[in-house]
Length: 95
Length: 155
Image 1 (cartoon, rainbow over the protein chains, first blue to last red):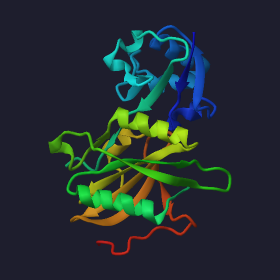
Image 2 (cartoon, chains in turn purple, cyan):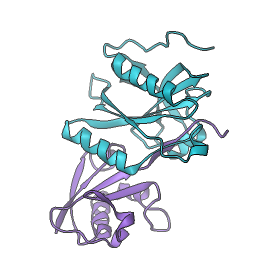
Image 3 (cartoon, helix red, strand yellow):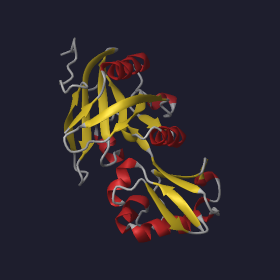
Image 4 (spheres, helix red, strand yellow):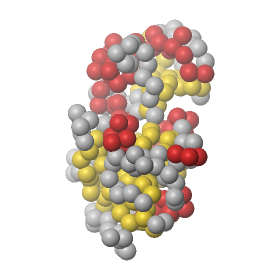
């Protein structure tokens, strides 16, 4: 089934400036792998060397954070929308 | 490289930084990306809650993924982009720390406002180098391209 993945601005340089990519898959993990298959340069930004989704990458299925669902095993259905949301953190100095 | 924003949006950021002192404030800047001949221009400021725990908010900030999802959608609905994020450095220069660099994303403006003793002292914007080794500064300008100056800088 086809679902759309919303790409955040910082990662659009790896998707030919596309803000939305359509992929096939029946789970969140399959959809993300479909995204990587189309745009392989995204891989190191989404996955660590251990093959796991990086901690500072958040994935929402429609309105829900998949970490609070079945993570990458969360099933998806036709017309669902996945959003990749980068964690935004920082701060001044090491005081 | 430059980032343009209106005096009123800049004032909102300054007010947020001063009101949050001695803690860090944070928020999202949405607008139009740079195109040939036109610099990146902020159209709207979305203030966010600093989601870090109480004892660390004086030198750390975190924007929740939910707030970022909402900001991303708000931008898309208006035909705009998330251009970057702002945060304050209480009693600290408007320069990115190593901690900022560790958590930064490419192609994203990081506007930092220095708040010294509760008052705005400096405002600078930064872009992460592609090799993540450091940031490049971009000039902060008003909507007609004049570089923003702090009226009463604290030396």
